Image (cartoon, helix red, strand yellow):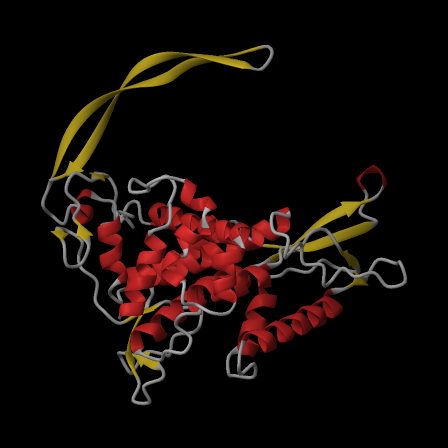
Length: 387
């Protein structure tokens, strides 16, 4: 429990830009401030904290990205992923489905941000993934769907062998099929080229930074946390897709160059939110090293599913113990049938209707060249807020 709380404090000492409790942005430039709780660490995570400020900055950017998406995905729900420090710390101290989503979206965010930094050339230790676009005798490497699948499977086998103690464990074959199922290969031959996202580098360093303190532990809370972290990373890695560009005279496609690219992070976070809605409640098995569904008639969750062990609060009223901020004064939608409806969001307490006046830009005119001028208009808007 002590290690878990220390790590939660490390994360929430970070400057989550744009959030109300951030204090100063200079911490981004000082790895000692970021990692002051990790001075006793050894190995690669210690190197990141003490020597690699550029990589550490991208890790922080990934955590920021994860929290921003968490707030977006839950903006219309009772739990709106508020990043107020005291509230989120309480959330992370329990094993609810909200905790599972936060862990997954954070791991996904770090994977995404580090991978993107490699593609943009912002990190000296990585670049685009060029493993598929090597030249043979100066000639482009032309491939088709069959040879491309073989190359991807070989690359993934090497990655699994280098990143796990037991690369042959059950489930790796399914993960390969999941990865390839999301890639649509063009007909005929084409050339590996472009700048493929080096997602394996981002995957590996997300795992180093977020998981390394827990790998030697086997308590129930740790098993759940590491599972959800992995689900977040897999949501990035196994949704990678193939993008292609045609080359040739007059728009013809005599040569087609293709590369691997991650989807938008909004797409990934939406998929993880769906996993949140279908999360599995689990209990510890008798062996003490794994978990199983609480209901024995439910199938075992896959590595892509989110899991939890504690029931969530209803988040209707403020509760210091659970981190609930309540929904009083939250804006609701009186015509909606979804979670943002005034009945659901306000927990059947009722709502009040009022009209607000706001100054907005209006009657905008484009002037040549490159200037837009607008007037200010007073606009009245009806809103409903929870009692």
